[in-house]
Image (cartoon, rainbow, N blue to C red):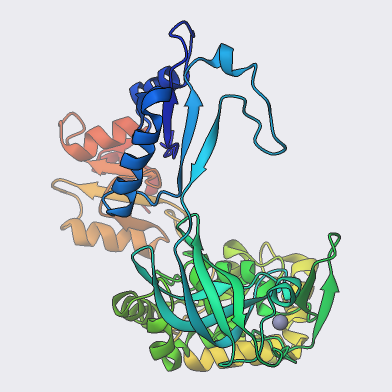
Length: 458
Ligand SMILES: [Zn+2]
């Protein structure tokens, strides 16, 4: 089970000491169970003001390891506390919260950035950097159009705003000190340049939305699959990074991933992205550009009904770039083993879409997909079998000659025993070698060389 941090800043006010499982006891129990809990202390009514003062000094000195925005002060006696009153959203009778005032700063709004996500285009205030709670802050979400109007956000560079870090963590614009003019709505989606419109939610909040159903920001899942291990396998391009790059307009299509180097400077400036992670990412993209084979490439494309298995069958049937030629010629793939008319129609339908065809061509130019020969039907006594050969051999000239025989008969020879091994060939089946032990463990049958010749020899 994953351990979760319990952020619970409590110190308890003792009324009586009769309670069965008091707040203090609950926290102690969490400690014993191995959770990480926050600091706390017991005090009483007389010493409470002094305790609040002491905690205030500690928080202000910056010595706390977690961001702290207040104290929870509760009765240790839960039975007594149950007799207390309850407010709307604080469903506790046991105590109350003490909050420190948020540190705020005034700064000038530079511009409003519009960032397209899966559901809405979110306004983000970008302002002259200020120091808050010990960190430099230069951006804060403005939530939606209604919130921008409520605050009175004006024109870029003219508006003076007041910023806090809500709960000491999330930067937030709390007010406009001096407004000028009126902000301008973007005419096009920042991610796809499609048309935008204002939508009114059930609570009356006005939000900006992209009306293009093909908008990349709405199709994050496809990009996730493109970069996944079974696809182009780009390490370091997390969902968050993809979302950021799409929202920033760096990525509109799969092909743009291989042009991200054009935005290297801007990426290094993105929050949570440093020079090092940007360089690592560009290196991973380059590895994928030259190292993705045809099967992984086809799997990455998100062609409906074409997963890794169907992609493999297509590449085996046509080779590469033979498959590209077949696509251009409008070939029927229904005859390919395991594909059938429905999947064949899915591939052709996908390629008939002009946008898909364009991205496909761009990708095949940008990437260096190695050529592959079509796999002709294998023949021989070892087809579909994987052998591991160990120890001395006597009928074959040596192990290499043994291996060549297996391969000539359609089989494979591997270096180590795994679940995929069909047979281990070893003339000393009683030996305690690691390969023998592994074979026994996995239930892989062990053959002597003579057994092998009897079964698979010509
Ligand atoms: Zn869009």
